[in-house]
Image (cartoon, rainbow, N blue to C red; front, side, top):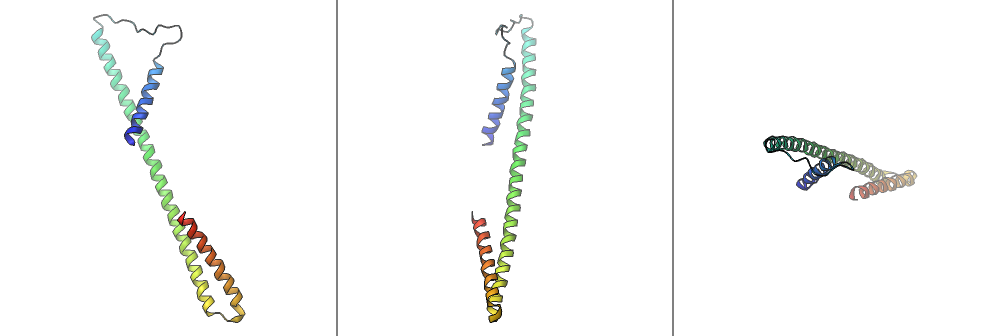
Length: 135
C-alpha cells in the first residue's frame, strides 16, 4: 500500500511538473533545437535537473509518509485512550453494580425498594457501557 501511495504521489508530482512545463497559448510546443556543441551541455543540464527534481520528489514523499505515520500513531493513541476510558468506565460501573448487589443482599424491608432501584440503575448502566464497548 505504501508503494502504491508513494508512486501515486510521485506520479502526481511529476504530472504537476509536466503541466508547469507546457507551452502557453500561441507558443510552439517544439523545444528549440540544440546545436551539436550544446548537446552535451544540455544532456548534463537535464540530468542535473532530473536528479534535483527526483530528490525533491523523494523528500516530499518521505514527508507525506511521515505525516501518514503520525496520523496512524495518533489514531492508535486515541483508540488506546478510548479503550482505557471505556475499560475504566466499565470497571466503575461494575463496582457500582457489585456494591448495589451487596446492599440488596443485606438491606432490611425498609430499604428494600431503594436498594432494588439502585441495583437496577447500576445494572442498566453496566449493560449500556458493555454494549458501547462491544460495538
